[in-house]
Length: 138
Image (cartoon, rainbow, N blue to C red):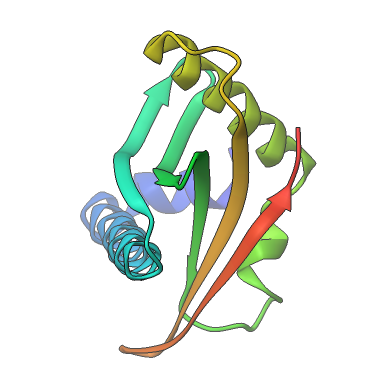
């Protein structure tokens, strides 16, 4: 049993509150990222698409391109850039899930672009929103 599982067993109600706070932060970051990308002229098509491969945070249209945006939200930049959390395994998952999305639409060969949006808070206020277009490729 790891330390998180041990904590979860000893303090179940506190664990639920901590987990809920983490999910609320992620949701708030996605809301801000979606608004920021729409202000740049993109059309939001889908949020939180799920397949057996994983989940896509935001699916947008930018002109003729389908944009898959991975949103990373952090309270501080203590442990490096939020985009650093999008490692090779995460990129593979996003690419497989995006392929499942376009298959579900009936357009499996639709061109996709993969962006990363970093949302950073300084305690309770928004510190920065950084958009990395074409952050990775298939």
